[in-house]
Length: 142
Image (cartoon, helix red, strand yellow):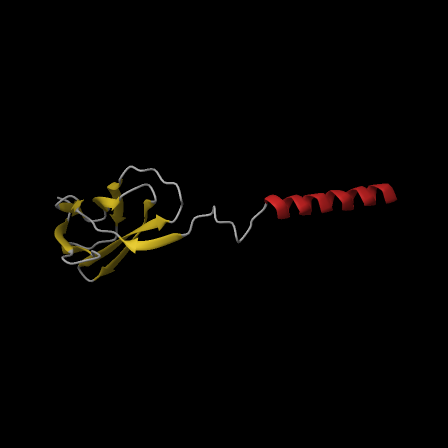
């Protein structure tokens, strides 16, 4: 019994030492930090109208950044009355090695649902003016 107890303690100590040596290190500089930023959108693509009860799919295009350290992060959409407001976020990594190819947002899609009939203004916020505005109509099925 003492031998089993001693063996369990020894294995636990060995695991603890291994974790402290190879485990998470808050001072590890190999783990990149990320900075979020508002992306510049070059264009959007969507249907001119959508049937009531269907989703409106909006595709976004633009350059995320000059290399692979820049990636798409998320959409921040809001519906205020008849305005569909969208801000698109990217993130930048401070990693020391990144793919050197330019990073593009090639049709990342946002689906908007629960729209009532009528005309909606799509407003895409930009990091610098001018913002992008476009119109879509939600119509009743025939």
